[in-house]
Length: 52
Length: 233
Image (cartoon, rainbow over all chains, first blue to last red; front, side):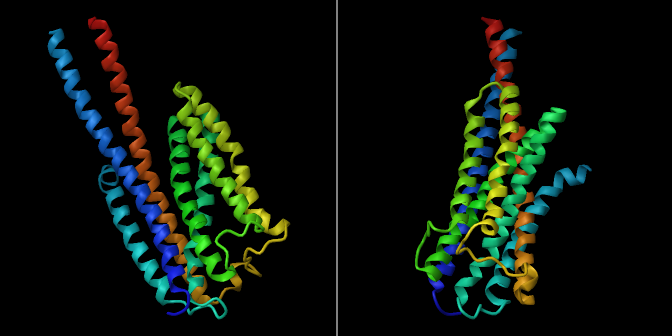
């Protein structure tokens, strides 16, 4: 391996950083939705309790 | 079917990670360095594979959009939307790795005289606009219809990107005689990288479609909650 190696490494690092960023954003959205779902379930249980 | 639902995605995800690892080892160790450009040419394997798989992802959006307009199947729209997000990530891998190769070989990060760079940027913007369009329409039915029509029109930017090097003068490297003209080790590495990115695409698409289903479930529960809250008042 020789010659302009920094460009080769820079290119692959950029590609996998982009991929990691997308996977991270998917995970964040998943975590937020799970939290919303749990919260909504609790709120709906409380709502049912109030109605009864 | 139950086992596929339960274990399919984790197994596929693990397999995709393994394939990425093996493909990177292959890129750096298996093919010989290109004679004139040297090792920096190894960017080519993922650069080209990402442009193929990115175009395939937008092709899936096209198919999903047509299917939604014909059958009104929400799953087709969900897949079309998910495929734009994943496709944009994979296309961005190609678009943003290109300048590293260009700087090393041509001495410029972004040579504006190359039409393929311009059409690739237009393609990214066209699909970025697809995501913005979806964000801008609140009514789900209307959002799906408009996005489907736009998803079909936007595919013109993919076609333009692929044919531009054949119809206009360009400094972008074009493989003479197609990929068959590559030395066998280079060809094997390229095909393995394309297969790897295809598996990564399917994995991410599956994750994203599941996320969309979860998001719709949360939206439905929210609506139900607020309706019942109004009834109580």
